[in-house]
Length: 226
Ligand SMILES: [Zn+2]
Ligand SMILES: [Zn+2]
Image 1 (tube, rainbow, N blue to C red):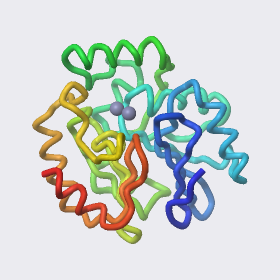
Image 2 (cartoon, rainbow, N blue to C red):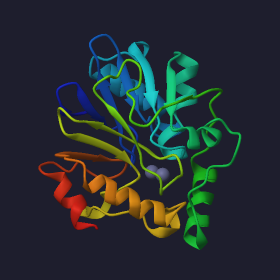
Image 3 (tube, helix red, strand yellow):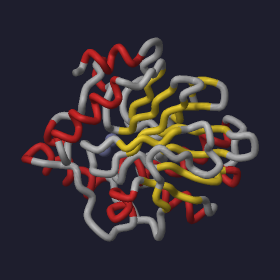
Image 4 (cartoon, rainbow, N blue to C red):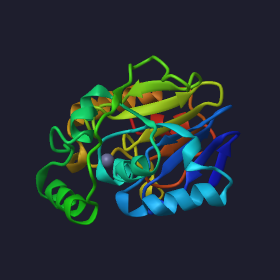
């Protein structure tokens, strides 16, 4: 577990995916939870750092892809907490529709990889977030709709600490910040618009769904992608 700022941690148990832990005054919030196969490792990581799964009161899902939300049903079987997501990704999260976001041959291959190697159980229920409104129990974080990678991709911004958690709206893999390539975008036009919106955010630290943190004037790196 890496400390990003006071009460904000990056979880490292989920392999190539980043999940985050937000420590409140009385409870904990997960932002994503990684794939199903690392669910036990995530619980262990919490325990190794003095946190308990039973103190988790809510999870925010950045988007309904197996590598980010696959562990949730297994964690919920151990301990109940609320799961929030953008309304447009809730049907995929609850198994009402198939997950979207992959296009073309490359996208087909990635979708196949997810199905074969990252199987997961859909959630019974997920609560919709309202863009611009804080989630109950998480007053310092703004929920930001970031369509493009999926229609209901969601980010979290903490204005006081200037920290942006952006899921797969941007990736920082292979030592460069970039939009996911077009095969991995449900809506490339929306992704470009989202990028424009993100560049307006005064963000110092950027936490992507994949790849290392970007610290120190992260908004400048986002601006360069425009
Ligand atoms: Zn994704
Ligand atoms: Zn991902």
